[in-house]
Each structure stands twice: as C-alpha cells, then as structure tokens.
Image (cartoon, rainbow, N blue to C red; front, side):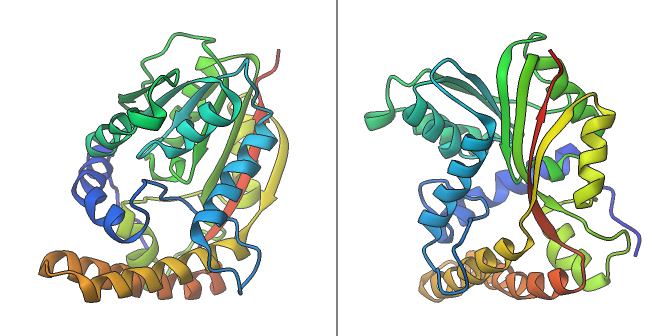
Length: 278
C-alpha cells in the first residue's frame, strides 16, 4: 500500500492537538513511551516505562559528567529522570510546542534546580553547535521524522567525537503495509515509514556511526498497547467530553489492531546504541 507523505508540520500539529488527551488516559506525569514489561502478566505500566529508561540509560553509559540531548523529548520525564539519577546536564528538543510547554512546567517544585532545558525545534535542524554533547538519546520518536537520514546526520554533528547515540524506536519490519496497518499504526501518529531491525543498523552506519548494540524487542510492544488500550477504554467511559471520548475509543481500537500488525510483520520495536568515532 502507498504510504502517506506527512510533513514535520503535520507531526507537530497532531501532537499539539492531542497532548492533553494523551496525558488524560496514558500517564498524567508525561511518560508516554513503550514499556519494558516482564511478561503478559505484568500490567504495571509505570514500572515498565521506567525499566525502558533504565535500559537505554545503562546501554548509553550515562554518568555525572554526561551532557545529554534528548531528541523528541516529548513531555520531558526521560531527561528529568536522567538528570535526577545521574546528576548530569541535559537539553530536550521536540517539535510539539504543547509538549515542550508541559516539560518546562515540570522544572518546578521537586524538579527545580536541575541543569536541563527544553527547546522547541526540529531534529533535522538542531539549534546546537558541532561536537556539543557526550550523549544523544531518544525514546520512540525518531520514526516520526520524515527525513530520517538528515536527523542521523544532525545527531552525528552535535555529538562529540566518541559520543554515544542510544535510543528506542519503532520498526517497520516489512516494506508493504496493509490498509489496516497503515490506518491504525502509521497514519494514526503521522508516521510515513520506518526501518527494519537490520535496516536501522545500516542507516546508522551510513551516517558514520559504529553500531555497538542492538536489541529487537517486538514482544514488549504487545503488552504496552494491551495495557494502554485498556486504560483508554476505561478513561473514555469516565469522560464527559464527547470528542475526547471518541478519540480515546479510537485509540483503544488501534491498540487492538497493533497486535494484528505485529503478527503480520508490520510493526516492531528495538533499542540501538551507536558511537561516533573518536
């Protein structure tokens, strides 16, 4: 099936318009990424989401001396988690003004004083100098960027020699996507196309990186969308806003379709770590 041609403006508009609804049923603290579950009996999304952050941080080798850029930082919790756990410096970059505003709002109270900043901007034209960061991280957002090679080039540019690029992202294991998969997995979040597990590694190497670690985590996304789909259905029954209720029920339907997309080889998830040569 022919893919759509969504622009960065399409992605920005979608997440600006839906941020409050996502927060309403997914996680009000702003954690909106895939969880690393222990199995089908594990329904604790918060613990699973923190486990994903732990895995990415550990694989990246972040410590107190790190200067971290979170690309597609969304509502900001991952970067705040890194700054609190490791006492590192950080910058967050995201296309969505609404999500950046939410992230900035978190830097009060218990999070006040952290050495992090959040900036609205594009991953294809990062507002940072060459060789700035020791680490670039991301969770489940790079797939949404239409010009992925340009993003990889920008990540390479802003990393210091020897710097680490560590991230999780959604995968497109096969080229041809069914109409159902396109509607419920790709078009739902304005995603044009993705890489396969091996294709992603090749794309990183083409950008000049040395891939040091890759992990195919397809089974994990099943449980994430089972848990979140159930939460969306329950929250829809409690909301008085007809538009929000309809959107949540549509999201819940898509969560069920995602399992079928995984079975058809149309959707996957992985974690990758790459290094910029010194």
